[in-house]
Length: 254
Ligand code: ARG
Image 1: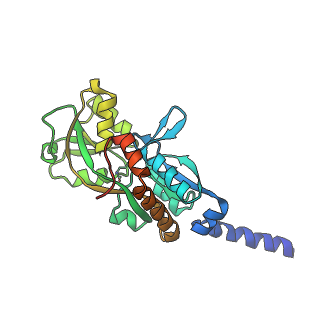
Image 2 (image 1 turned 90 degrees about the vertical axis):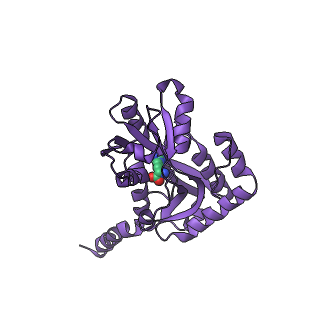
Image 3 (image 1 turned 90 degrees about the horizontal axis):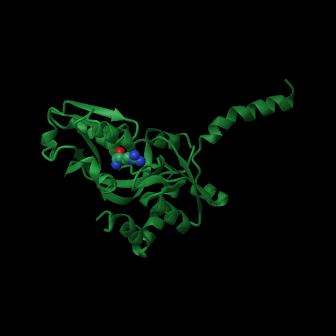
C-alpha cells in the first residue's frame, strides 16, 4: 500500500464515526435545512392528505423551523424506527407524538412539549369505558407506544396485542379481533368524526402525556433552539391558530 492508499484507508475508517455525530445547531444552520422525521400515519397529528404530508404536528414543526430560519425537509417511516434513527444521526429531529418518558429520555433529548394529551380507550361497546372494564379483555396498541407499556401494566388485562400502525390496531378492533384499543384521545376523536358509522365508542382517558419533539441525546443546542422557537409560536398566536384549526381548542400544555 502506498502512502495515498494508506491515507484513504485511514479516512474511510474514520468516516462511520464522523457520520455518527449528531448535527449541531451550527451545522444545521450552515446547511439551512432541518431534517425532520415523522410517521405520517397518525391523523390529525401527522398524516398524508393524498401525497401531501400534513397534520397539526407537521404544521407546528414547519412553523418552528421557519422561526429558526430553517427549511424543513421531511422523512416518513414506521413509528418504531423514528427514535433509533436519531441515535444513528439519520435525521435531526423527530416529531411523532412521542410522550416524554424517563425511558425515552435515556436514549434521546426532548424539546419543550408542543401539546398535552393522553391515551384513551376505544371499543365497539358503550359499556367498555374505564381501565377496570379492560379486565379480561384483549387490547390493541401500536408497537413502541407508551400505550403498549401502560396497558400491559393495567391489572387483569387478558392480552395486549401489538400492531405496527395505529390504523392496524383500529382495523383489528373494527373486525372484532380485539375487544378494545388504546390511542391518543384526539386521534380517537378524529376517528369518530371520520367514520361515524363504524360504531366506535370512546371511553375514559387512561394516561396523561406531555408530547414533545426529540433530538439525538445530548444535542441540547438544537433542542433549545427548537424550544425557543416553539415558545415564540406559543406567545405570538401562531400556535393557537393551528390548534384551533385542528382541534377547535388549545392543546398546549398547561
Ligand atoms: N403518544 C404515544 C406515545 O408516546 C403514541 C404516539 C404514536 N405516534 C405515532 N406517530 N403513531 O408513544
